[in-house]
Image (cartoon, rainbow, N blue to C red; front, top):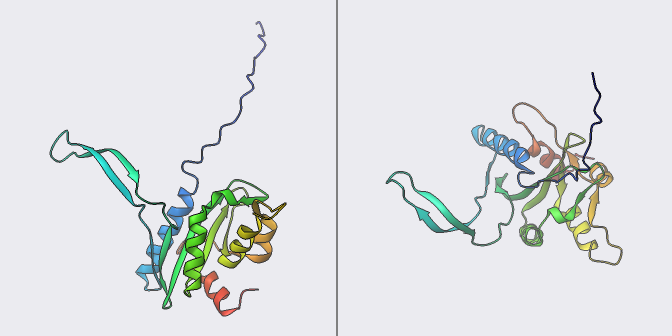
Length: 194
């Protein structure tokens, strides 16, 4: 038997961010359906506003969208009402072990959350650290602090994992509901967490 040397190509791993966050979003949607079914809260995923430009009609009942564009930038992923207050939040996932990059958040999302908070709404991010296997509710105030600080000289462009451990609230994972983030929100609002 002849041994042939194996040639290995140096490959640069390409990261695809297209579906980053889809598992987290589906877990939150499942949780929201549970909350609605037991009458605890009404929270829904917001549809992304799209302008349809071109539609193909190969058959009467088989219309196919050929071309569409986003009308306006979407604000946040989820909103609704809980205990008589507006609730508004976004879901973010990161593969990093050490931080969540602020580039994962869009400026218009932060402005939207600041406006909602200004009017008495409950605002936060639900962040999944995929490699650690845990989820956090990050209060809007903590997000705004890091967001505003990033523009200063030597400003940090991410929120460190340590800040999540110290200043955010870990969300328990279960069966029903999958991510009981309202339990965390209750403790945050009434001050029993921490």
